[in-house]
Amino acid sequence: MNRRQGLTVLGAACLSLGVGAAWASEEAPEAFVKRITNDTLETIKADKALRNGDIAKIMQLVDDKLMPHVNFRRMTSLATGPAWRKATPEQQGRLQTEFKTLLVRTYAGALSQVSDQVVVVKPLRAGQEDKNLVVNTEVRGKGDPIQLDYRLEKTPGQGAGWMIFDLNVLGVWLIENYRTQFTKEINAGGIDALIASLVARNKTNAKAS
Amino acid sequence: MMMSMNRWAMPWLVLVLFGLQGCATVQNADARDPWESMNRSVYKFNDVVDNVAIKPVAQAYVAVIPSLVRTGVHNFLGNLSDVWSMANSAMQLKGQATAETFMRINVNTFLGLGGLLDVATEMRLEKRKEDFGQTLGYWGVKPGPYLVLPLLGPSTLRDGLATPLDMQGNPSQAFTDEATRNALTTVRVLDVRSGLLQTVDVIKAASLDPYTFVRDAYLQKRNNDIHDGNPPADFDYSESESTTP
Image (cartoon, rainbow over all chains, first blue to last red; front, side):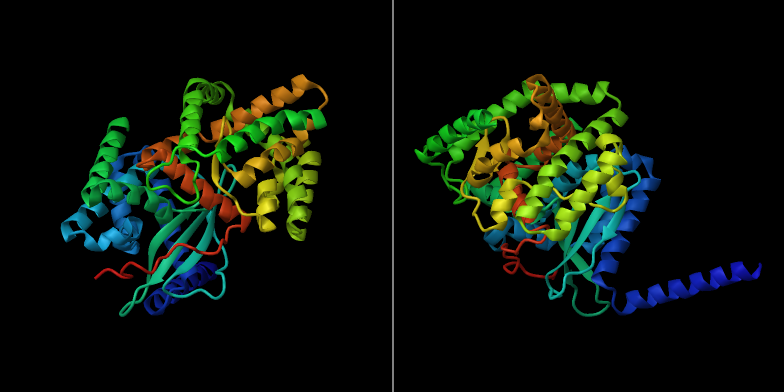
């Protein structure tokens, strides 16, 4: 091992130690988003089955890489609105399952477009609160850049970190965009009607793919 | 110039008057969409026209024309539309954006083979789309009721009234030869629609009611674009439990 290699190894060791320490204490929200997105992008780039739309594998990826960092219960409850609190735990569980399937299945097709994209995390806007904090990013690749923003909350207590609870694609927040549609179904036939129409949509999508 | 303005303005005026006459009320009406029943009809009409005529041609365009050529076409049209974006940046007194878009146009026109190559983006001169509806929004004009325009799709009263100006403002309309103008318009439609092939499929698969999905997304996106990506938050996130029990 020559001196240069030695230095590199030393540098890498310091870096990883530094990163490790940062995670343990407090990771900055931008760093958190950068880590999650790069990790996911690398996995997709390395795996052809994912890009070909293998739903089972994509679901696995989502469960392994993303779900630990997403407060999906909060996402679903916000999309559902006030009716969420009146729903039974069983209904709430089914809503989450079906909503997740809907999202994963519909965006699975977009994975085939992943090639040489890079995610640029923009500087954090000042004056934001820890319980509702937006990180702006931009996906750059072929064609026009894509605005992709995350809404985060700080998880309290031990090993404090961040959880994603809303997502913005091209200027459209996901939860807000589902709220009206969900409310319509609930007004027409209650929570069960909403679950039923989510199930129906998922069935149609499964047939189409 | 004036003639063609009138040609475009008339159908809009008629439409607006139609809208104002009021239509059948829709249950659970959304305050932003008082003309929902008319809008839904136009939406259906657009969907049929798209399925029959526009989408198949856009698919053929993608299948037949090599992607390198399509990218060139996209860049060329984008360079033309940058001119109107620059004018609107200026009307919104955005000095830096105006200057950067001016640079973009020069770089792409002179170094990018007349706009076929988007050299500017690689030089970190980012594209900033601005139209007259955004300019009006910047100066505080409210969007007004949601409006689905025949063939053109989602809009609002404000954006719909701005649309004829946006069309006039595009340099492709400066050609005196009508055949050239029409050809450019056709290619623009193909360029836009072919770029949206996947998006439209995703929207149809992702939504319980595509009409509502598109409307809400359009209204959110316009508000986002008027505030350059940072609109004031108006959605209430506080009503849910904040962390998993």
